[in-house]
Image (spheres, one colour):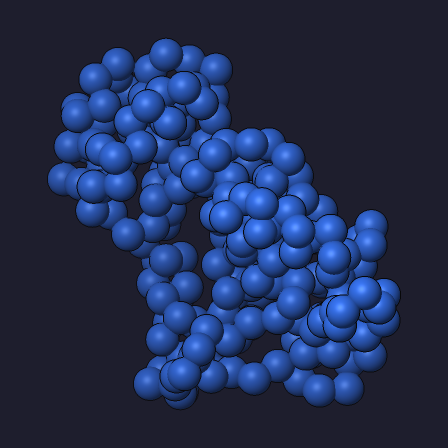
Length: 212
């Protein structure tokens, strides 16, 4: 999976640019759509959460930081960089790019403990809230983002070694909005978006606090 992601990044990106597609050995030239950026960011977030390789997190942050300038104007999100076509708000058949982008913003803000970015992400979600609620049956992933904001993420923090060594146990945590983040400690810490509410060397005790 990591090799595939590295190949995709190599073939379809150039510094901060993402391209839509590539044919044979020809150089790509069609500028990426919102979905191209968003799902690549999502892939890097998942890669980081599986490996804790900081390179993946850095790439996710760098690409995500370009999306606002390229696809957002006057409180509207666009599919194309020339801002001709507005985004599609429909998750019925596959996840809409804008819905995934909202989740990406929340994830990156909480993984990096960036409260300013978290507040910004929540403001963008608030701007779209009425549209999502009006057509809730067509926007399940967007509704999930609204629920996520209400419930809040929980971030499990520990050393890279601790998180990797206990991967299977961590996967059994029930709480739906769980992220993991590296911290230089031999403890396990469970934190909400403001502070940590449980810490212990025994992961089981921390998991009980998360899933209570």
